Length: 486
Image 1 (cartoon, one colour):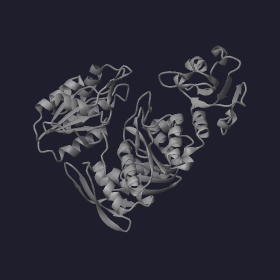
Image 2: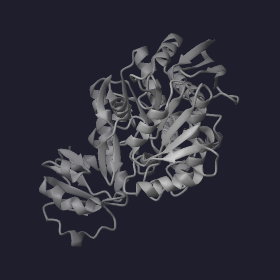
Image 3: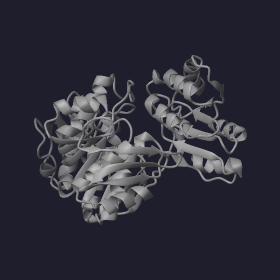
Image 4: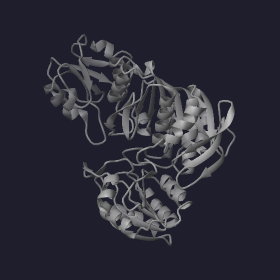
């Protein structure tokens, strides 16, 4: 594609060199650059793309895009390389990606789901119902990306960078997908990864404290403002009206919206709810009459996620029968997932990694477990450290026994993280011990558990790795549990 066409829609472009040239690929990773590429020198939290311009040119880049303020003389870029200077490199990259892949989001019915919790489960539910109805669906999210039923592999982040995202949409269009459903993280909204996308539907699941750190959001106001950006891009919104921030969002929306909930007046209301140790069951109006819906994921939060998915399904004309069948069959990796094992112990893995999500999962299992609830959890490094003692206090208050351990320490000292969690649990009368090594912690939990107990391995969920000092080591808790039990 001609560079002029790729840059269409970007304002205040400056630069030098030839702009009437053919570009074969666009990249923001110098290692992926090929002959006749356009390279975006994007500044990240850990590295600056400007430092890799030489590598990109060596690999075949013939044009480089940088942000205003970069000292071009210092870079000493060869005269035959086209240099493009823009006010906002991230936004420019998103526009270029849309142009290069011919605006694929316009050719799909695009559904974006945002919120602190429930994004993954809700998107999986939407995908399953729509596929049951006969739609060809693409999914982009935390666990994996899917195109027309084919899993593309594990995801590296919840919402990809704009270039990867637009390529995924383009591949969905080629595979004749009619609908794309995606998790939209606050970071992706703040960093303009989804800029230029045309969302038909936006979903707001809930909002609570999470992702507050120097590398994410400085405070709750910034976090919420980032979430709200999705609803400036969509035609119709669906909001959890029981969430306080859902009410706040309603007042500032410019698009049309519908609501769902359990406790407050709304468009789609769940009634007569039953929650057991293996499922939830509730009554809801599907098409023209009330129907009972059963989902084999325990917990009140499952009702909210189901209502969000049902709202979208009804909007897209799905039948009551297909909605009920799809939700009955739904299985979401790492979300209240029970691990089969030779000892027939109740061992659940769950992605709960914030105070509210940990409280939700522990409260849910506590309500139906005949024996003890044994909580095994840690907190991630290089993330909001204020939540660590809060999570310690929650586990000490709800669980019968807690083993404080490591999660993804990243570049932090695991011992220091554990000590911060311990400060919170000491405020309670909860029984606990500290075992920093996560495998040893899981071993200890299994050793102490009886068949009436339930072990919750919280924090990692679907993740098949543990991140230590920038290296992701294999760590799949399903495999680890079965290796320990033998």
